[in-house]
Length: 350
Image (cartoon, rainbow, N blue to C red; front, side):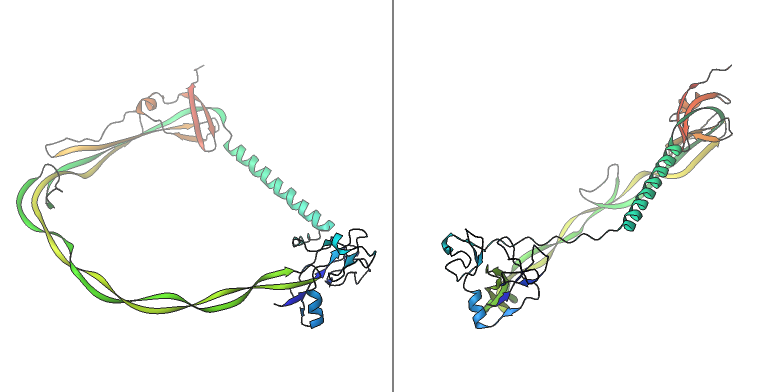
């Protein structure tokens, strides 16, 4: 397994990427210290020298419990005060959290630009909200009924006779049967047996193993060791096998088919009438044995104007409400620029 040289950053002067095995900063000479965490750079050097490999495998460095000195794993006693290694603390520790990404430098000019954009955006939103409120705000006014309009329509229908065919159990009501016969309604599949057939299939077959690097392990002395695991290797193999498959044949299913006549009402003509008065009437229509009035539709509108000459269109919900208004009548109303919101009681005449 490959061994690679780690690195550490000096907490005193900020020098980055001191060699992992070095216990003193190459910039300011400060000791590495027990709290400094090692890390493995992306381009870390692989250790190949046998002496250095043995040093890396000698065990983790340890910190003296008495003087705080940093000692190699091979030292049985502290090189600073002579205390035994059995009271020391191993440098092996959970890997450090990745350093936080530095915040982008923001100068005075950038802050001013950001502040200006924020003020402009706030002003735009304020103006938009004020404009929307002004457009939608209701206001009370007096409206004069200036015109009346009505529309009425009748969809006429005619009873007609149709000749059709249908199957037993699926016939409409009110038919007059002309003839009936047995006929093929549909085909159904019936299994008559089985037969052999060869089929191909693919399966995964293990052919060996391969060593795969799955991570690195901190050796606690400035070095890191690649961690591998054996994983199985498979290949796809195509094989054939003999199986049984069902054999089917189609069999006709017979039902009784009817030919019949049936009467249905169908839309024929739309009759319409309209007027600009308060005398609505339905279009003229005379029902007969085979003619009738179908759907009736009616619509009523009133045109109002205010003191400034602006006109509004109001559509009452019923004919009775529409008739309750009088030409030239004055009415209190709540309006906005989208139209009439509500018509209130009539204003009293002076």
